[in-house]
Image (cartoon, rainbow, N blue to C red; front, side):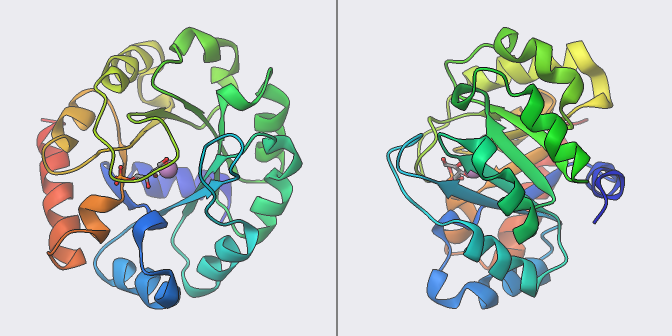
Length: 232
Ligand SMILES: O=C(CO)[C@@H](O)[C@H](O)COP(=O)(O)O
Ligand SMILES: [Co+2]
């Protein structure tokens, strides 16, 4: 889908809860994707980890492509890899609509963000909890989205770190609504309203959907309802 259309779809209306497939049943991947789509998901978040940038390995292009084959939902690929420049083209070819690279993985993210946009995808920059927003100030004009991590990346089901909220507030006051803001890590029914109150429109949720006893539709509806309370 073209970049402008993705951004319009995600903005209208906020907030968007993105299931992170990290903790889904990969033996039934297609069924899991169809199930969260039927449950009301408006976009998906895929965590690509290389065992180098983070101390964990997940999956790469074949899984992104497999998800692409079963859904037309926007796919946000969170690249936790040490050499993002080497892989963004293949990630886009596999079907990513939003390509999220980490500021900590590159000395200068700007050429990569520009390249992602030139390929028609949305360009997004992630920062870990200890990374200040000053570190990405020069790159902001090239970002469609900024992801503030609320855990150290690498694993699902970690505890929420509220330092991400301060950064969301600062980014919101710097850039208003021109920039999509995403938060990822420990987002659940207890934390989601704080995230939207701080300015996030994009809420990545893994364990609170895939490890919950509730049906996906119930979790997604509850999280979306609670997220909306933070915007009032
Ligand atoms: O990027 C990551 C982890 O590094 C995430 O996208 C997790 O998958 C989120 O899982 P929960 O914290 O919601 O369980
Ligand atoms: Co993620």
